[in-house]
Length: 318
Image (cartoon, rainbow, N blue to C red; front, side, top):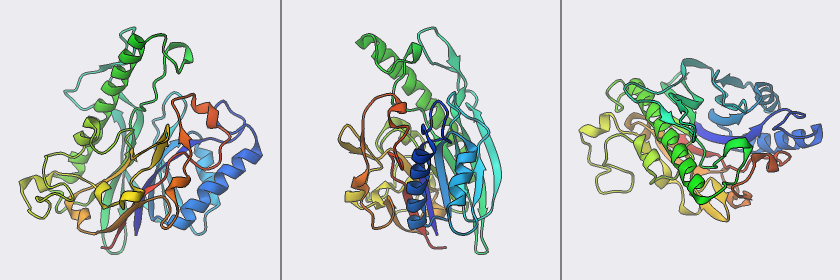
């Protein structure tokens, strides 16, 4: 069974403000996405940047077999949200967007405006098979692409850039805390017994402070001497599978020519023991085929086929 996450990049039907300008570009995008999913053959795929729910249904309709679409009700101001595309039936556990208590609202701009909600919803489902069941969370944390008042993507000066970089970081850290709080509930105090996966575009790399928030107690990371030494932290810890991805595949986006892994799969100990392999892109495909993107208006790529992210996945064997 393959469990994965993929940012589908501005998945809208054509003709709107953010999606492809025409039907030809839209169909080319869907065909490219469907080809990758068909090659990957995931049982559970957490997806991000679904701008139009009907567009995800269109994508599912291009895939062989029966597919289930499950979407968050909480979208951002562009209408994009997270969800699941699965070949297995799922049941929704929760769909939420609030910061956990006692975390206070965070500042979002120079006016002093604050928010106590995540930009996109955090959706959790239970996946059941004949052999076992597990809980999966999908999320999409605040982007590092900064936007400024008036719809600008360039700052007036470096002071503005620094402030809005801080505002984005506040939000991303708070959102990571909200995801971690949900994971804590799903672990029920013992992730050695309860199988939990957290999937998503975290918009930060493995060693980033925001990503580290999700891991829980330090220690026992994959590839360290402590990994094979069980300790009390194993009950609440989540493991990022990044070290299991072959080094030449260990990226999910290319930003300004630099490879980075900002899409992640994290698992509890009970699920980690069942992970056999991990990777990015479709198995055997060249992730290097990804385009290099820059800090610019997302509308620049509105007619691009496929996505500027590669899927990140694990193969498990119960």
